[in-house]
Image (tube, rainbow, N blue to C red):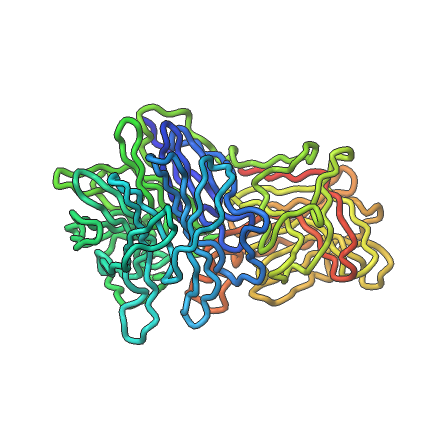
Length: 551
């Protein structure tokens, strides 16, 4: 019996959807405005997880111009055993203004998770967070949140279910409204169907995306209901078990539900799986705030809880409580527990392709702006739009997976215009980042190293802390610790500080919004290397290596 620490997938890995096929576990997570879209992770023991692949690549979805936190939401992973086919249902959230939440939902399928995947099959635009259920009788069902826009009606709306004809790729009959939730927390979404001992179980995320988040469940003898609520009337998993009445609140951070006695927060949006030995687990999202704050820079991560079925046929956590734990009991047969060191990155750009964990906001990674020069062993990045752009920023980023780490690179760059820059930084979205970069001095006579910062769309150039770069080559590193970053540089063998430590705790889900007390994003902090050329889109920077070391 081993206790395994949560999260099992640190950093931006929200809305986990987990399945088991044979002895292999697969887990899909949301990616929002990041590409390639939809992350897939793999494990053989529920303990050790590795990145496997992305699902939506290249031109399969256009996310340029996407506002935070829209984009690709809540992919649901399923496996049709009859046809031995993987399916993913997902939403492309395109507009959130006016609380209209315009989202198109699709399904794709493949025989192998690494593809090739089918062309997207349109499901609906009724709401978001679709899931597919493959019934034992050969029928298939889509469940989804029907987004409510009428004034005076309970928001965000009903959970609806419809039969779906996979062969003819269309909804069969009508949508059935089955529930607005099984507790008083409200804000239900992410419906998922399961079968166990003669019942259909409908599992929901509830309570909003913040500190009241939870997982609730109901059951029925028929797929379209009626569904009875779990008898306690409370979530079966949450970080904040205190009772909450929040019906009619369409979505809220619920900062008043922050639980100071819990090491993990925001536990909710889960997915159920069983082991070959008939042990039951739920993978769910969680967050880890900075000490003494309610800011969560790493965003929403993936945790696991061990579950059990009661004699009355209800699902509950193994210890009988509903408080999410920062550890879980591993399955009977498991390997050694993982450490955060497994999420370190050490890329020297000496192979045909670079580390698959690199992501880019809004647009594709293609050779027009990023490619490996294997002969000279570096990654060449051509500058494009400024980092404020939601269309074509030249950013190669990896998820931050610890609250205490070092990121480092070495680059050569020769700017000939003041709008050309290249370097290393931290990134949340186009309005929130910090960038230590080589650029041209204001008098346009020499390259210098200087920090440029964006906070809620405001630009701050640290003009009084620049360093001359006489040979156009420099090593840059950043030391991040609990929301504070110190940039350093090295021209020969000695590391020196650039500027003073900078408070970047605002690079978090709660810190990127203009309104205090609200959640402005659903993603998380990224480390990145990149280049900008708002002059001719012609300059480039060569990066010799990129590494991230978690402490």
